[in-house]
Length: 367
Image (cartoon, rainbow, N blue to C red):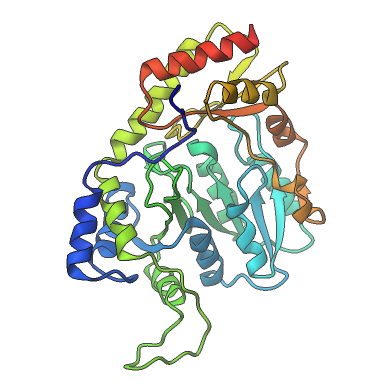
């Protein structure tokens, strides 16, 4: 049996052509035509005003915190139900994370819990890192308004949600800054890579400065501030340019795969798929669901025996030993999602027959 992976890379066919152009130009370093083209393509696709390409999404979030002036002991609010890369950069700045639970209607950060966290915070929070989980939109319009009313910077972690829209507007463009990821398992991949976007040109130029070792504009290497080696290489950007040419196709295919799963598994009552808010159109990067009565580990093990990769949902950050002393506002919604949830294979090269086969295996376990 062929291996069915959770979310493997899916090349467009033009990547090698563009990589060959990079090699001919000999611009292998983190500079060159394709870095500029990739940044421009993201802006054109999402409607973002300005962008800077980075080595990964975590680096982009770190740059966002740095340009916003987040410092030691500042409080940064964040989604608890997320991947560690969304929040680890809070620690890079020696700031203090304050984790906020999900709501059941979106599985994303709860606006109600956000308001309570702001009220209960020991001092005024400086920023919020909002994750659009598994490519599904959080209630971002409401959350952005709460942040605005409380003078809190909003960083959208749209690492998993490139192509997702809320009321016709792309995730990553509602906040002060937005972040996309092009890791190997994302809906579009450059092997490793990220992008920081904003309507604020000054912030993006400052991020570009920090991402390039904070080198001053001199004919020699002069440094007043410290920076990082965070810029994307021209080689990876070439892959990104080719991937962006099929971006909308990939989003539509992921949504179609979700519809196949929902149709095939509609008669299994204990399954609840990740919901979608009214007005939202997520990219369905991964098809995710919860099981009301079956231990998801049993299903994962059964699928693995059939050479099918699946995965548990994210373990919330407030349950991680690393953050055992962190502030937390919630009532256990994300705990329950973690306990009951599973991610199914969702790669954009899946066929309908592949999904039917996966669903047959699931039915054998749950029947």
